[in-house]
Length: 385
Image (spheres, rainbow, N blue to C red):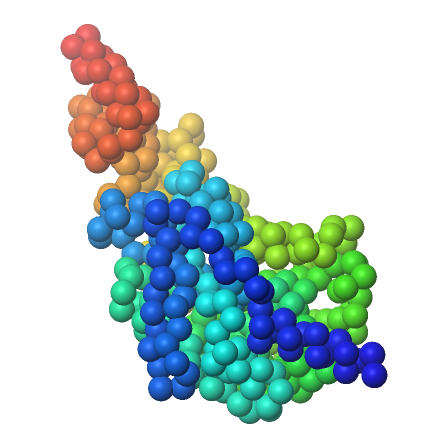
C-alpha cells in the first residue's frame, strides 16, 4: 500500500506539476508556442542569453527542463555561471515546459506507466526540438535537466532515444515501481547504444526522501557499470548531508562543471596527450569538436601550455607549437601574443613586432588592447636601440 501511495504521489507531481505559473524573470524571456499532432499547442518558457541580440552570428547550447518551477532557478544559475565569458557554463538557451498542460502531462504519464510507449519522445523529436531550432540560433548541443520524476524521464530518454540530447542531468531520479521501465530496459539498450558520445550526470543524497529510491538508484548504478559502453560518459555523485530540495541546484551546478570541464580546462604539458606532441593535442580537440560537442572546441590553451614548457629551454620549438595553435584557430589572440614573446626572447624583435601587432589587431578587449599596446611599444623601442 505504501508503495502505491508513493507512485501515486510521483504521478501527481508529473501530471499536475505546480499551481503557480513561472514568472517571466527577464526582458529576454518569452514564450515559444509548439504545435503538434500529438497534443494541443503548448507554450514553453524560453530565456535567451544576454548576448543573443548582440551577437547575431553566435549559436547557442539548449537546456530543456520539464518542471515549470525550475525555469527561474535554471535561468538565474545560468546567468551567473555564464556571464564571465562562457565560464563555467557556455551561454545557453533555457527552455522549460508549460505549467499544468494536460496533454503534455499525459504524454509523461504514458511514458511512465506503459512500457514501450514513446510518444513523449516523438513529441520531443518531431515537434519541440525542431520548434526550438527553427526559431532560435542553436548549435545542436542539447542538455536534458531533471529532478525526481523528470530525472527518471531523462534516463528513459537516454536509454530509448539517446540522440535527442547530448547530456543528461538526473538529480534524485525516480526509478522504483518500474518507473518508465528504465531498470528493465536499461541493460540491453545501454549495451547497444551507438553514435556520438553522450554524457550522464546522475546524483542522489542521504536525505529521507531520497532513501525511498536508494535500492533502485543502486540498481541503476550497477546497470551502468555493467552495461554502458564507450559511447556513454557517465558520472555518479552523492550529495550526502545536503537538503533534499537543494539537490537540483547542486546537480545542475556540478553537472555543468563536469560536462564542460574538457572545454574549459587546458591539458597539462605533461599529460599523456600533450606528451605525444601538438598533433595529438589537435586530434584530441577535433574529437571533442566532432564527437562530443558538434561545434569547434579550440586547442589553443593546451597548445600554448605545451609551448610554454619549451620556452625557457627551446624557444624555437615553443614558436613551432604556438604557430600550430594559430593554424588551428586563426582568430585566437593569445597564440599571436605567445609567438611575439618567444621571438623577443630569441632577440628577433622584427618578428616580435609583427606578431604583437597581429595580436593587438585581433582583440577588442580593453584590458588586452592596453597590454598588447604596451608590449608593442616596448618592442618598437628595442628595435631603435
